[in-house]
Length: 249
Image: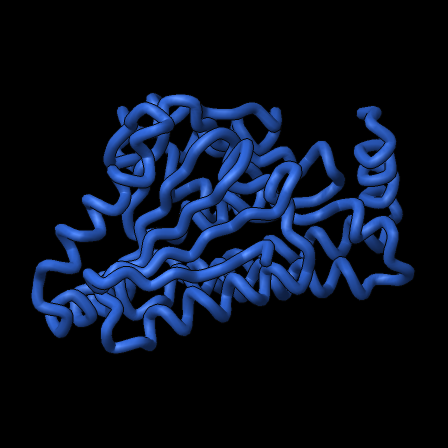
């Protein structure tokens, strides 16, 4: 299964992405992730969720090959709706979500990590939005929760990355640890949350979402509209075809 869930005895659930070679998710995988995170939050025995991945990196976004191999716009619409559902499930999860990020966290990975409550990263982790190089936009909403405003703009325009160490310095990553300690570090943070009153923690999650200054779901949906426009012009197809062929514009 590209996405699966495990429930530990201590009230910490893990949602794990394992979709070789780079954890780029197909449309159905995004919806599966959304469902598993939502179900974990709805389980009264769950007090915290760790979202992590196996393999080379945390997440490389959508499966562009699936999009280019599908006639019409079904895969595009599906990917946009799937990403929206997955990001929203992390944000709306009734209990705190801890993202454990290693290697690359790109595109859709930014949406997941940016909507998490806490981020723990390995020292090899890096974060970025290569969307402009793929003829698309999106998840700047979530990147803005991770880096300062002007850094976010520069990263979007240039498709360059920021390291876990940089995000730690800005306060958006709680801890940076060696890769082989990442899971244990994330579980430790989750256990410290799970040890507290579940009623209070669920109230705290709802309260913190309620005082957010930006509606992350609405602003992300706004971004997606420009991706649709770029697809209608044909420029997005050109960029994605070049990516699939291993070339760049």
